[in-house]
Length: 468
Image (cartoon, rainbow, N blue to C red; front, side, top):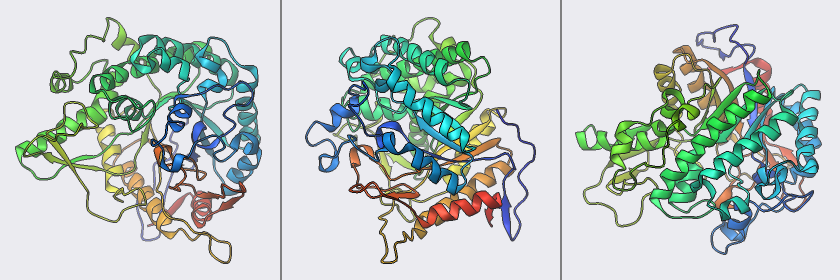
């Protein structure tokens, strides 16, 4: 883990500078960019199955080809070097490395990541590997998926396989990416794969995902004692619509289900008592076995924070009839936060990133942090002169880097920032209709084009900071 050799310089009228060893990165996920879903032994993931189900993904899009990164990774690393990235966060496809989730390894599958990591190192780019970015082998889902305790055990075996092959070169590990999405969107609300709709399952999946994290930490450290291990959580800024007691309590409950139910067991070895009480109508939490929380609380070296927009909530006058994404929360209303919006409909509010980073720092002051995802989707167009003038994205990134700097000035030990995303890609249930990349991908030709935001980011990296 790099150490902070220099605190960020105070804001001046000219620039906000970041430490010289700060990680300037970009991030991607396997299913969103790789394609090659049936090549070299890879078997189906839950997202392949979800995409094949009519009506679940916009326009019937799939990740079958995506950005064809599996065949074009060398060219993509050249682009990373051109931008000046010092780190690249990618995810490993579980069904590519262990087809069907079976024990052992698929030599052809793991060899792809072997080549990718070597290519990154040759370009002077630090590899940061995420073990799970939502592509569970379908065969494991058929046996219960994340509602089955055995899936956590299988994940530990998978982590050991990847660590044995890549552990000598990967410089930062993320066990899971946004387990909230896997559990709540995948098993509770059905918006993501595997498309289940059961509030109790979302809590059961939450526990097994966290158990998988703890077991993976053990596996990584056993294979590579010097491994630097983290987890990427979508920690959010949850705000109450008014200062009334009812609205503040609504914010407390959503904060518990979005933030504390994941971070607290990792950091303290206990689930928040208020969350357990709040969800008593849905689950008795009897799935937590003796010793589980000690495993989940295996020490980590850093926390990855994914941030896009804050939440604004209030107590509902009458409970909603439709199911909530959050279990036992049908008496809470979510409101659109004020301000400009991205193409996703998400409010642009960098103060939320500042608040998340400072809140985590206040609660766990010795925990190093990385912003492992932050970015925005806009309706990018290629101009007649062949440029993508994505000024809105540049403004978004500049404002969020300023917010990150503000948190560092307040004491947060932030070690790096990863733009989401390097490439335009398959955006889950939205298909290819939302573009997050700083590099444009023409999905018909697979041609890459650096957007103005990529050139801007290159200048930021070169300068080590941004204009104030």
